[in-house]
Length: 298
Image (cartoon, rainbow, N blue to C red):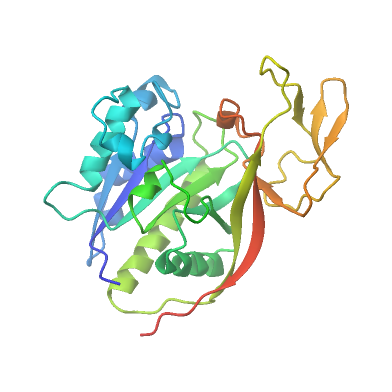
């Protein structure tokens, strides 16, 4: 693979996720923090109008506006659709070198800890994931797409890409602990990229755990679409913990327990994420895989 020349750090794709917003602002104020000798790093504030108003978005979720056909459709003109096209032009400017790697910063109200969400399973992404997992046991790795599945999220614009998802963090709130953990992880990633460009090997372990997306579960609803049950207390906050068939997942307003009816053990994440109520998602389900990848030779 060729050398990495341009890296984008993007925060605030959702305007009320302040960790990414203020990390971008900090890096803009102190650009030396993200400077490395072998590549250019630039920052981008994803949704400035939504941030200004303290909202996730203005018209629609910006992180669902990056389908290729939509980016080239002149009839789509909502604020976020226009903003997606602007971001696309900044990351892939006509006649100039496109960005080689995207780091997309997010936060969640779910108990996701420090999660690396891969844009795909490109060998470089897996090697980086293995390295980050080996030096920081708090890092979990999640692949949110399935093979052949089209994606409309920002990280789909670049083959080498991932999101850093941290939580639980309230919407519209800065959490100093998660802010610092995210910044520390960014610096480790940038140092890894620098070493990669210099031909160095930074592997500590080639084995790591990957949580692979397999589906979602919505809240029980009535014929009018109104929620009829809550996340069961035994499941609340148990992101990345095993969920077995027959175990509780919901509790109705009449205190009736609804159990998981799947056929095998899964590992739910984004449990009770506040922003996902409107999307009909109570949790995402994953399978847990142990991966061993080939080490890069010097």
